[in-house]
Image (cartoon, rainbow, N blue to C red; front, side, top):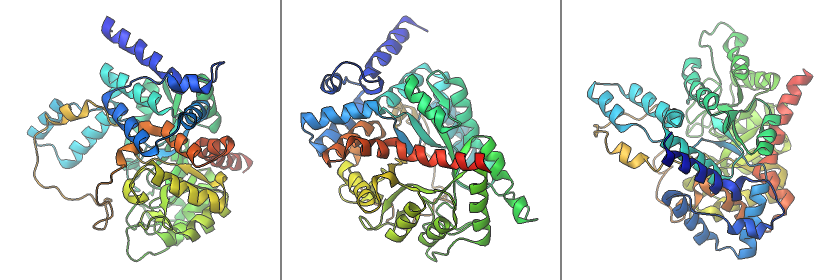
Length: 442
């Protein structure tokens, strides 16, 4: 490592202190005032957040101090994404690589390049420290139900955490997450984007046997469906709004038995409701919104939210502007949190961002990749026209690195410290703990 890079690594570590250090004898105000510049991208998002919140100094001090103290558990999200190697992808395009090959190449680089590239490693760590996040319930499964397909992201994030374990490690239990906070480290808790189905159709137990295997590989939460209909039920974009199938009910029961959290974030309303009614253990909609606040196919209606909360589960509010409505900003995010907290209790709401920080080196890298002609939409990307829609004036404020300002927003709404801690991470930790506790009792 060059002297310049060593110095940069030292400076990054020093810069992290205000957001990740444990409480010291200094006041919250003093620590909040120490927040320093990170990089142009992170700082621009930070300013956008301050512009929409307009916090008083007292609110800012309290929020940043509380965030630094708290265990922050993103209910569903993505580790910071690295820039791809544009030259390598350009060579693959010239060699005639297929769309699937190019997607795999992009994903692998975006998920793991910080292991091999010093600049990407620095920026990866910088984003974590700016966000002050302890753990991400990491999307470690590609959308679908094919076990081989689901293994790809799981393999990549296992590789990532194997190589960065002094900074970022794979959590296996909620106790690991708590230890990460105590040690000033970060961790990933793995979720898959589908229930693995054998596809042999011999018997129901045969079809679902891979649920236990993926649990043993570290998966702790699974989507019942993605946007489209599958063998378990309807996704949120299916106009028929069919409910949970017989195989879907069996899958929920098997996830309960094994200790995997049932997630209906992308499921249709009836599928979500019936999954909540079928589950004997707390389950979640990990990254969603409230339809009563903003109507959207990815939001949940009150009867679904009630069923999930009545079962001890959790509603994770996402950071996707189109799902939130309003100005697509931090106050819009807090409106959805408010809705769940006031109607069903602060113990049933969290934040599942469903977004990632992207390396500031990405733009120059992608400019090296030659343009390609029209491509077909992937099967899972089933969005009715207008579902993702327009630009929102405050969307920049919802950057993943602005997590500390989400806490400031909760302070502004009058939440007590203990309730903010629940929303920031303790609620997701409780659900995770209860699933594994139930497994141990079986």
